[in-house]
Length: 227
Image 1 (cartoon, rainbow, N blue to C red):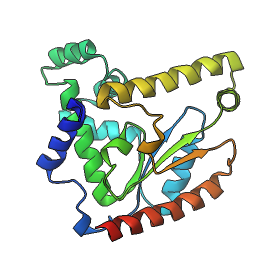
Image 2: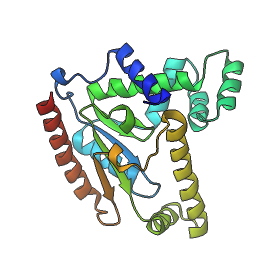
Image 3: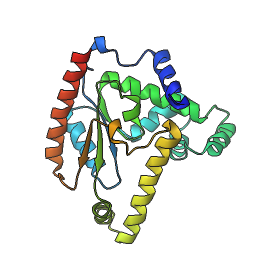
């Protein structure tokens, strides 16, 4: 077990929020969505949130962390974007007079994920699939060939494909770095997910949502049986 994983286990035990098999499934569904840039992640997350009638947590997570750290949301957003750069965190913490270390950030993030696993919601990115590996959550990864993702981003942002190519590279790299720096993990390990979906093969968002709703029910039933 790595130091990061050991720390996560300690946090789970200390918070007393880790999923308890005897408690059964949460009141509302919990789905984590990881995605490659341009693989329809946000579209699927928003549609699934509406279908399951549960909140979508993405930018809202930053507000939750800001509240816990007692800093303004702009500062929390900046920290979220540079969380892997220890020097940046140290400098901002020094200026704000607060403990804004990576360990502190991870503590709050893990506890928020564990809390959400009890009440339900769609969690977009930020390594939630790693924290909730033993919970009732459905952990989804959306992928697609790079060329298709570039085309989608170019159309969505009305930019040349050369610029879209750079945007895809930057977004994918940032997500990989976040997971490596925060959790010591790789986002492309299939075993870390319950379902990996190629949106080049299936790009009908409504059909994807129906599939995911059924998949969540299957995961929830298996979790209860194991409990």
